[in-house]
Image (cartoon, rainbow, N blue to C red; front, side, top):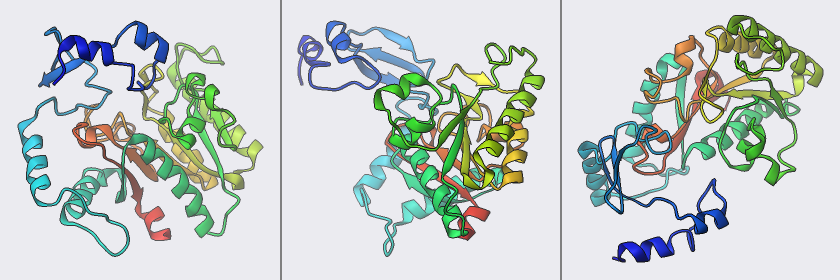
Amino acid sequence: MKDIQELKDLNAKQIWHPMGHPGDLQANAPTIIDRAEGVRITDIDGHEAIDAVGGLWCANLGYSNDVVKQAISDQLSKLPYYSAFAGTSNAPAIEAAETVVNFFKPDGMARAFFTSGGSDSVETALRLSRQYHRLRGQPQRIKFLSLKKGYHGTHFGGASVNGNARFRTAYEPLLPGCYHLPSPYSYRNPFNESDPAKLAQLVAQTMEDEILFQDPSTIAAFILEPIQGAGGVIVYHESFMKLARDICDKYGILMISDEVITGFGRTGDWSGARHWGVQPDMMTTAKGITSAYFPVGATLLNAKVAETF
């Protein structure tokens, strides 16, 4: 084990830190976290702090949770891995799918497709939405709608539907056919409207106008976070997600609820969509699904989508 100074000297030299400028991180070495328990983290110099963010919005069960650690240890001793590709399966994957689907049955979910994380869950949902329409004889439905200020990961499709230029411009041109609507953010919006209920109506009308302009028969899905996380923890008016759901239903567009941050209890219920009384067609999850103890996510499908496949 290297000593503290060696680790500080090495840090940011070989490891490529996400969401940071490599030169800046070499000049200003990142804090090195050494251990954690419950809600507290301790750096390599012994400084302790409360981790109010919960890692990267993900340590829902706290750090060093003995139940989780024991479950991981027991499974590693028996079967550390096996594929669930067609033809093989394993008991933990089957049981995990049942558990996850049961968590989200009130949201209308029926199937779980496991992924390696949040960005992968979003990518999977975007691909499946196109394939869903193709199976229904509508291969022209390839476009996606999303909200400005939204965040949907860093993979190519997720970056394309992201609503923040910081996560887009360095990688352009991105996936074609992605269109961004104003966020129903009462503090700053293009309508100069501070009343959340009126703003929800205005954004919903803009959504319908954009659908009609693009031609409804060309749009595959609308993806949104029930509460926008990285965009500034933006909580919509209670009517907005219902209005968007009605519009999606009217034009045969799938609704994808990105629950990577909001799922598994972070907002006080199992899903963020549940707060607004909305059942999406798909949900993307990760982070809290394992409290980040190991990288897993899941794309969840409702019965309508699953039965089409």
